[in-house]
Image 1 (cartoon, helix red, strand yellow):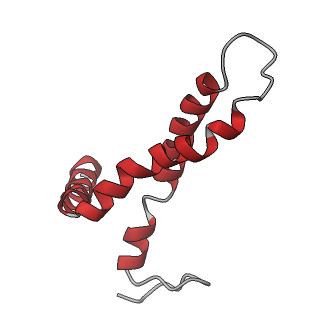
Image 2 (cartoon, rainbow, N blue to C red; image 1 turned 90 degrees about the vertical axis):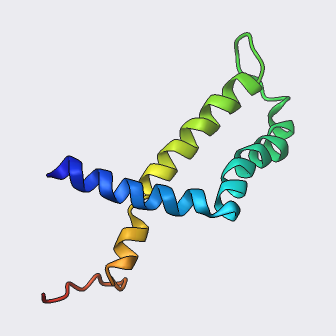
Length: 93
């Protein structure tokens, strides 16, 4: 049951995201803008070993995007259910 519900919710939001060209455009553009704007700032960063700052920046950026994307994924579901913050009031059904 949990897997079925998860698949339904994932499918709904995946279709919603894929229909929105704006979301797709900025979903691809934001990591590139992060690299473009913050990459040159970190080129003179002493890492203490061999390798460039780009070898640190790119994996950390991907990790950051993955963690923040996963942590904010449920906010849309909470908002659609009518939760008002603060405090989150439960509705009687």
